[in-house]
Length: 148
Ligand code: DQA
Image (cartoon, rainbow, N blue to C red):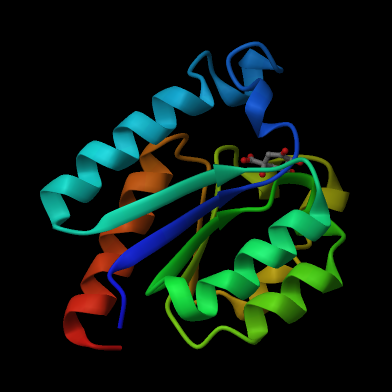
């Protein structure tokens, strides 16, 4: 089982830092990546950190994870609330999957309360900002270590 964990980020997350800072904070996606890399090193796992604004590209990366990754952490951003394609791709992955959101989607507009991809995830962390990514890494690394 490869120990690389894919960390996949969806649309508009490349704009973190300047995008709605009152909701998402002032940190950039590069800051989140740096935090993930340092936490991954401490946990003894590798991370492959990616972002795309294109749904089909995210689907392709999830398909690649079947052979190249041991687990997936995904912040699908707006596609969380719309994408059966991402759900289907994740359902085809037999590995630990954790869904992450920076904001607490349940405190926001009602259309954000529904996550299509939650059905495929082992767990979801939302509302804790970039700490959520680090906690997700810890959870996936523990599952990999325990062999499930
Ligand atoms: C988000 C929440 C989504 O509703 C939104 O579309 C995003 C970011 C979050 O990380 O809080 O783009 O996934």
